[in-house]
Structure formats: structure tokens, C-alpha cells
Amino acid sequence: MVEHLNIPTPAGIFDAIAAGPETGRPVLLLHGFPQSSSTWDHQVDVLGAQGYRAVAPDQRGYSPGVRPDGAANYGMGELVGDVLAMADELGWPVFDLVGHDWGAAVGWWTAADHPDRLRSLTAVSTPHPAALSAAIRTDEDQHARSAYMSEWRNSNTEQRMLDNEGEALRRIFDWKVLPSKVDEYVRRLSEPGAMTAALNWYRAGRAGGRIDKVSVPTMYVWSTEDAAFGSAAAFDTENWVTGPYHFQMVEDVSHWIPDEASELMTSLLLAHLSVR
Image (tube, rainbow, N blue to C red; front, side, top):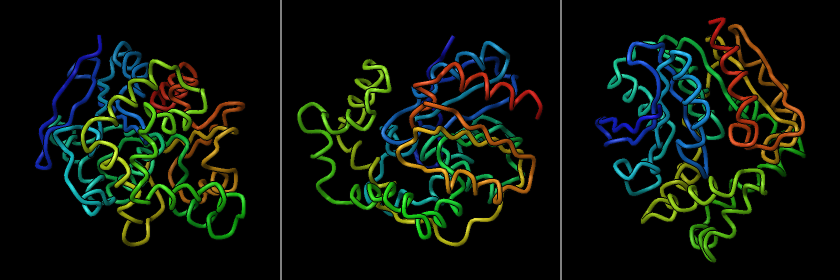
């Protein structure tokens, strides 16, 4: 049975969903934009039933209790710090980390900078940041795909996305996600300050410094119909992982893998965790 948690940290209180015994192997699942912890409903439920302790938080800006003003408060250092602070509060010295979209980006940086804290990494959709940066510079297709990142930094993006009951925000999902889930995402991001906080992840700019290669056991899941991330960065990601690596390409699925192909995503995750 899925529970609702509050996780207090120095930055504030994170809302989360969780399942499984307190003594189970810990798994932290991070959502992306423009979603919430409920992205992982299916995975949390099944992981919990399999004896894992699965926790999926609403990340910084999405949890009302951690919604600071100003883009500078949404840099990668703060986001990785949130992951470690939540794990500390949960009593997890070592844990498995799973992330989709922005959650995967946070996962890559956490794995690169704090490999001692992770048993494994599962990154969904978003490639290794260095592979993505290289592809944006050298691959015309990826450069075009990534243009939205600059557009979303504009000051009028909040109003444009939320006007007409979130019509533009809903279109992002391209009718690949259940309407009830999209309704929930739109409702959450319509809370006061929530959309600005979510967009501040883009406005905070690139993380400082060069990201290292990842040494922890890693699975990267990429879908062929992903509109945001093309094959150049996806295939190059293996060059940025020095530990055991598994690349899983999913055919005919969009960017929204955990929602659109929830059962497949869960089976891939269970298989990855079972050998680590």
C-alpha cells in the first residue's frame, strides 16, 4: 500500500509517496518536468510489494515546503544536496537511485559526485550530461531538439503554459499520458509559485564544473520516439560510464516512459536491481 510521507531536511519539508517495509532495500525515485512523484506510482507500488523500500519525493519547487524564490536556489548543487539530505533523513547510507528527465540529470550528477552513496543508478530518457552537451554542440538534430530549454527560460513562460486551463502544458505530453495523470500534473503546477519554481530548474543555468564519468552500476533507458533526446547523446552515454553498464532502447515509446510504458519500466528496473 502506497503511503504519503513528509521528509524534513535543512531546505524544508519534501512530500513523498512510499511503499514497502522500512527494512527493505532503499530505492529513491526522482521525477522530472512537468510532473511529480506520482510519475512513479506504478514502480513504487510494485517495488514495495517486492520487499524494497521505495520512496518518490516531489522535488524542490514541486513540494510546497521546499519552494524558495529565485533561480539561484535551483542549481544542480542544491538539487543533489536535496537527494543526499532526504537519504540521510530516511537513514539510508547507501541506496539505489532512479530518475526520469530532470530527475535523471540529478541522478547523473549524484552518481558522479557521490558514488559512495549509491548502490546503482537508473537514468530514464536523459543521457549523461556530458554526452548531451557534446551532442548539442556537434549534432544538428540534438541542437534543434534542445531549443525549448532556452525558450522556457523566458519570463512569460509560466502564463503561456497555464493559460486556458494549462492547454500548452498539456500539449507537452502529446497525448501519451493518461488524462487523469495530466490533470494532476497541471493542478500541482497551478499552485501559487509552483510553475515558476519548476521553470527555475532551467533558469538556474548549467551546473558548475565538469561532470565526471560515472563508476556505479548504471542502466540507461532511452526511447526511440523521445522528442527531447536523440540517438547521438543516447549512444554516447556509454562512454561516460566506467562501471557496469546496461543500455536499454525502448521502441515506439515517447519521452514519458514511466507513464506511457509503466509495466515495462517496472520490469526493467526490477531486473536491474536484482543483479546489483
